[in-house]
Image (cartoon, rainbow, N blue to C red):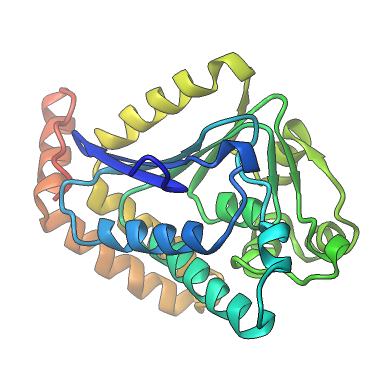
Length: 261
């Protein structure tokens, strides 16, 4: 629909989620979170999705919560809780996909917009992009999983500083902190997103899912638990079609052709 805050398209294994509220900085409101949840959860039922790209229209990636919308809510506490519940369900659904999730960030990624970027597996940023938590400056506390993601990405001390002080990071600073995978020129962001998505989309999606599960578990698993999980995952992948194809291609010195199974 033309007025949707988030649009979803799926073509040739590539799922694209586009934030389409540029005049408001792609700010997060009720429709935004409802669509994020619905679209992200729908991807779990599609075997044809090999890679997901999250991109946005306009100058900014996402400036966070729509404070003007929040201020107009009649009964703010239960309504914000409901909004956060859908936002969190959407982020969790994105995080749990086997398919890699790739974000392209231009302009500001603030508050919930930064949380959304943190939920992605890879983040490409334009040189002019900026990153800030912003919540406490408006008297609010973090949501979108940012209090979970940030300590794991940048460490507890830096995460605390970013949340308490709302320091604005440049794209280069965000990359140095681990929030961003790579930084490209503003003009090259779209092209680099497409190229990276194409490479990932041609990869072994099932194995990518194993990688994501293992990395998530490693933060709290014991070494023994992690070794057992690695054993189960590598055995399952070795028996899968892509695992057999990968080994065969390596031995034959040819490029493997993966189909994601």
